Length: 257
Ligand SMILES: [Zn+2]
Image (cartoon, rainbow, N blue to C red; front, side):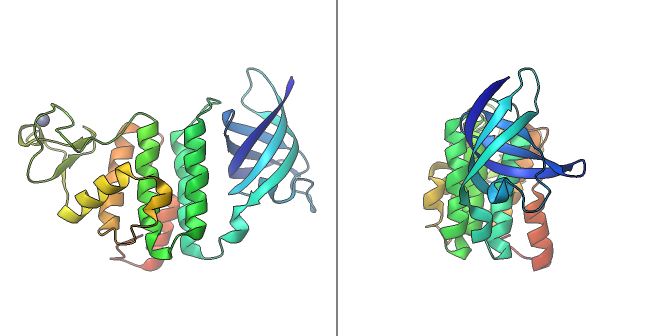
């Protein structure tokens, strides 16, 4: 049983017995880990804000080989992002980022680029203009999928490589735009010109710049297409509850999530 140190962001926690918690943490050095925090439900907890979802902290824990649950020894808070996210819209977009990592990533495989992308995205949800939040979430979803090997293809038919249909037909199953011939097999979504423009813009720009594109139109349409795409390629993905809740609160017809 080795003592290990990792910098990580808390994705979620749940109760364990009367006084303890299990924290699911995405770390830079060890990927997705699950830590038992003994006594952490007593107040004042000795781990403080370090175990709150959205918090970034340095964790020291006893790593048990061949187990997926390790014992937390110490947690030093680096940033309590949750306390800086007072309004519901920002909070929902930040939580959507956590949810996506929790759904798409598993195992203690480090991916520093993905960790940095998550950290930057969470910072952006605090600092960017509120109107830019959907653009940030879209950019994050596209770039997480790309880093995990599923980059939507927009420059040529995602199935056969032929020129794409002028109808802007996106196939979630094929993983991008398709040509007229492949589209005849069905299962495509017709994109508006604005949605396609937003999609290609946000696919290639860093998340921290996504905040500059306040004018991304048809954000709801783009999010819908990406979600359909993610459902096809990641079995554990079933939509983002954080955004569904936000949509429900905003009422029917709310476009931008
Ligand atoms: Zn084709």
